Image 1 (cartoon, rainbow, N blue to C red):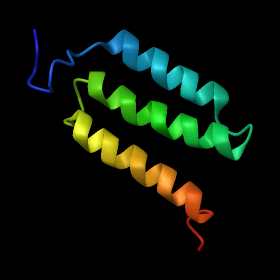
Image 2: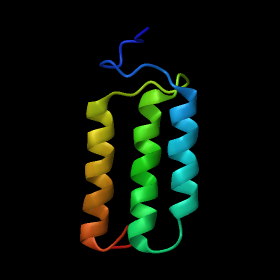
Image 3: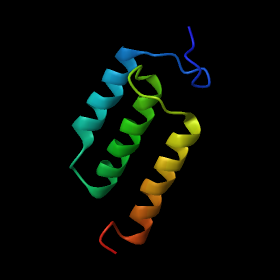
Image 4: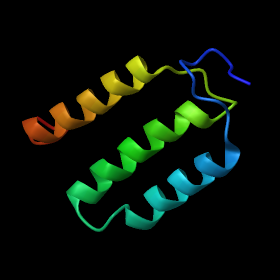
Length: 75
């Protein structure tokens, strides 16, 4: 059953796996921090508690990449 999020049905197991993976890789390098943040955003697609769309996730990921390219939030 789709909840209107462009075909991404709630899947608590997928949410758990994506977030667990993000937690495991976070902190090893700035690239792993970045990837962990992206995995968390993608997991929101499958979380029935979240109301997000692929477009919103694309924008969030683009912002994560832009911050990294500019050298971080401090600039």
